[in-house]
Length: 389
Image (tube, rainbow, N blue to C red; front, side, top):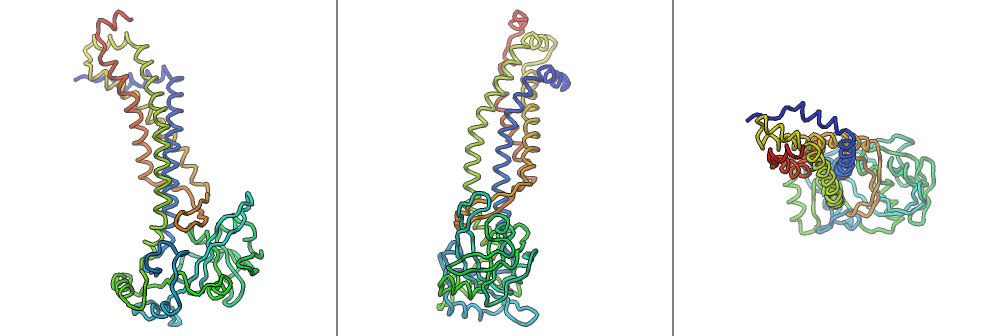
């Protein structure tokens, strides 16, 4: 079967470049929305996934889905500390951190509107358990004092959280003595202070979580079974990396579903626009279609030629929309995590999979928008085309 040359298809698009550009522009906007939503969802997942360490274990109260609604009393914390296989530091201290986690409202710098911020009580061991965390301004808080350090996102986004500021938490004034960076993880959206001081200030009698590092990461299942079968304990243990990955699921899935719904609605308009453009092309080139058929090109070749035009339009729209959305990677946003009800700062993340999904989405729009006009062109009779010409 003889096919219509690609150069003929491209020339026809160039001849109708004004309408083609309008069609590409409309489709590119839809592609931009589609890609941005995927990048937002991926950014949230990436932020929380990198928060955890694979060799760290998080212990929470059984049935808890977040640190803020977990409680592990001191007796249980002491029993957990007896677990064999916990790694030690250079001073032979167990790498185990007992941490209260609470929410506190702070006003945003941009609007002054109060928003929840996660406040974590920890220690120098807690800092050692998170090797990605480093102090970038000031210093680490001193144990037993009302000193705190703020994550980079908190320091940048909330009033009273900059280095040297005094912050009111739980009826007590705290001094921000340092700003830390955790490489874009969820810890950047937290405030850290001395665990015992936080317990006293917030009137807590139990820790929220116990975090420790295993000397052998492969021994996690054995450690989990031992903890969860201990009659003194009512806890559950998870790898820290898995725990934080689960924290992202509800919010990321919600954004994905909402974005997909919006993209589907917008895509209907883009598909209709592509269809109108292609129908106009068929009507304007009836004589050409008759000539192609008279020269021996079969119906299938004509159908493929017009379908290829539509796919080229959608491919151009996909490339433009994807290129525009890639600039969103330079944007930092924050939103409320549905699991913790705390503010979470994140960045848009473009991955190769998202790029492929975006181009595929654009091509599907082109296929749906161009198939009926192409079928119409292929169905025209040679005699009718010649009469119309």
